[in-house]
Length: 243
Image (cartoon, rainbow, N blue to C red; front, top):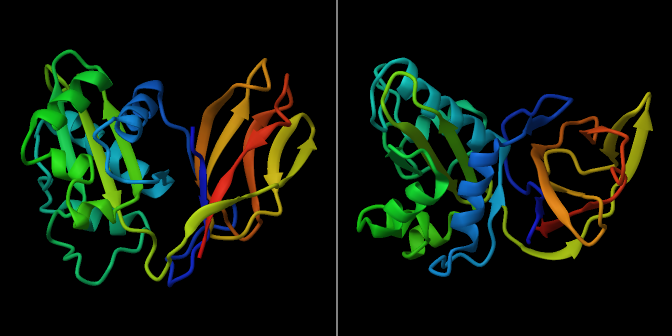
């Protein structure tokens, strides 16, 4: 498993002092895992970003609530703009009224495997989802969203991808070792770089097994809440992009 922390090197939208945290559902994380680990995936590294995940989940839920299925919503807001609305900085050539970042799937069986297989079989979606062109291979930051059937007879799956935040380049070559803070039974990782994109993996009963916990953008308080102090909650694994 690869877990990445990306340090922002360019102009970034304001991040709240407490940061931004996204905990994916089981189906959302499985979608990400299947895409990341697929044998046809051409990207070398991938990192899950909470802003892209929020944009993806909100759009998936919106398609069910307002009973539409399209990249552009009934308010005429397209995918690039929805990503910008969540505070993720896109390059200047990513026209807000266009879609350079999103793939969607309406799944009647409501499984991540169905959606990933459908994207793989689609000549229009596979290049995006699996990074099969230079343009999409450069989109190494991701978001996933899922909404179960409610307004439709099928579930909605949304996959978003974007380049590293504007101005940032680098490779995941080092290991980050944050401090672990416990207060009143609550656990947080501290002394993290502000505006860093972090995937947090938490140890299970066996310290040899780490499971995905959450993704976050670190705020000015330089901490990420990661739950309560139970079991091996003090053991985490992180790596990161160094600009």
